[in-house]
Image (tube, rainbow, N blue to C red):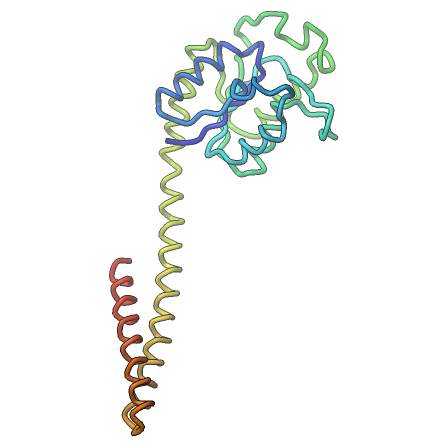
Length: 231
């Protein structure tokens, strides 16, 4: 199961969001979407960006609206949708982008170029062009078509992630083993020094103290050797 952030403008892509949300939940993923924030009085931009950063995978749906542009803490005047995408980039998340097909009929009320919003559609056109130039994108024609594209792309992406995870785990295991081996060398030197000193010690008090020290070292050596055998 992965934690997936689902990003899209709302009114124009509500049905598309719904089907993608459902299919990902059916696949037993933890999905975070705009609907999770509706109880708040104000749109929680910083929480959205924090949730993006805390996810394993980013799925972005893009139609023909640039979307709401927050007025605070947004010097570049980007929409929430683009801010979420940029956060996914900054967080080095895998980003799966799905764009509405140019040849698919689309309601005029959901086109910035028709309504005049966001520079008469220039901003969404620039955003789409940026996505198309920066990465491979998929184009959807309907909500059901989109659901199929997303489910395949997400599974393929997640299948590739464990290989990187195994490589990292192998490296961490190697580092841990090297650290344990250095500790083992240090313990052996302490053990040899303690046993050598014990052989030449005549005072019973010092001898008892050294014997206890040797016993402690022997137990730690046994534990360390057992740990190394499991790595």
